[in-house]
Image (cartoon, rainbow, N blue to C red; front, side, top):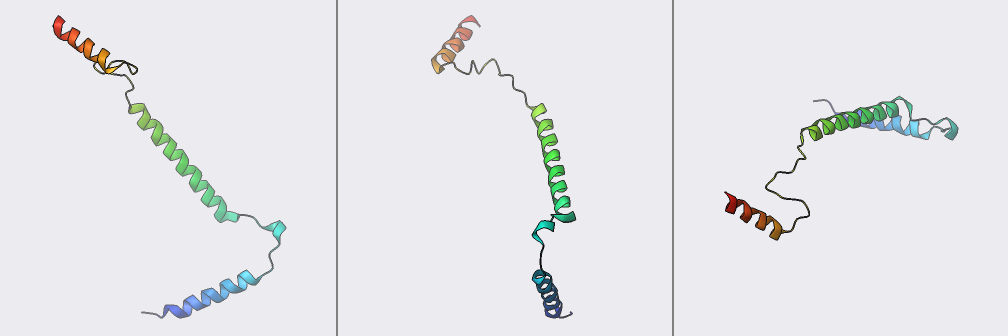
Length: 88
């Protein structure tokens, strides 16, 4: 197996010389890598939204007859249940 410390030190040397270069603050841009990352995030958000819309379309929001009204008290639900038993 080759010795990785030599290649690691070479990479660090090149990185150090790159970092030591003078950087013009007016010309710094995100570059191609920044665009690729931004585009990948945009595609991921689009795919997630499409998936969410598909899943939300499958949800049935209709309330069942047995559950009663959302604001109904337990007593009124119990009384409507006892009326149904008396009729049936």
